Amino acid sequence: MTTLFDFILRYFHATWLGFIGPFRDAYTHRYLLLLLIKRDIVNRTSGTWLGDIWLFIQPALQIVGFWFLLDIVLKVKFPNKVPFVDYFLLGMLPWLFISEVLSRSLTVLREFGGLYQRAVFPTIILPLLPLSLSAILYSVVMAVATGLLAGYEHTLSGFIIIYVIALWMIPLCYLLAVISLFLKDVAQLFPFLITVTLYLTPILYLPELMPEPMQWILIINPIADIMALIHAVTQGLAWDWWNVIRPLAFWLILLGPAWAIYHRAQPHIREML
Image 1 (cartoon, rainbow, N blue to C red):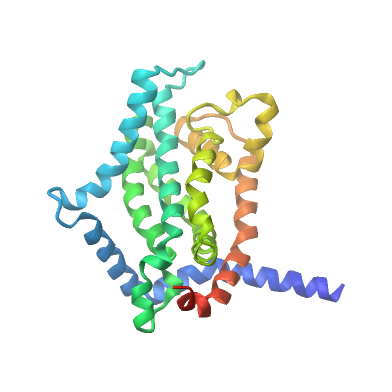
Image 2: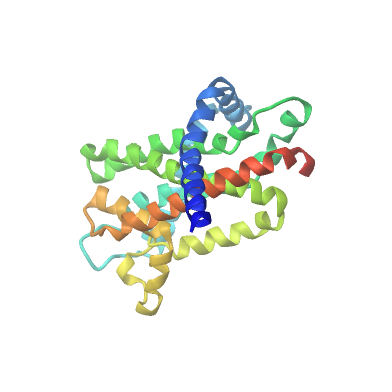
């Protein structure tokens, strides 16, 4: 009984550290984090005519491509009064944000390996880099899209949605950064997994259009709950408390282990490069 009680105490302590740790380290190394963000922006846009504007144009172009295929070519319509284009855009933008952050998390440690191999470097902030930059970009794009599609009164909601998702993804960023460094096969499999997850998340269709025998997928897919909440906030669609409880429980379960695993792996990160 004592052993179980000690485990629970350690787990709650690790969860608390997993919650405050990223914010504490981001604040401690805030100048370095800002410098890395600026460097990342320069590397991605240097030599282009439009410069930093490309960072905002790229997600918009992806959305236009999907919209042309589904609305113009395939002419997809919903059986209710919800316009398909509005529903799709307000779900696809957060999905692109999630996909970009998780994909970049797989390579961020190798990408900046040259920095911390040559000098003492706080590797603890590296998983926060793709999350921070993408959150800045997509929050603006999502705020504008939400204001245009759902009404100007929802503009702030679109902005907040991205940062809430960013908070939810912190433990995933740390886990993927470490796992992909030690298990390189994960990076090869991830594009397939992220594509399958897109198809199993109600972004291109309403949740009720999922076949009855497959409805259990929406229960075990926390991103499906997040999408339900997004559409509830922006378009007034139905939601229930399970849509809040499931992703919250998923986040709380991962916070402690993700933080602990990353800290234990830190001494070996340089060895793996």
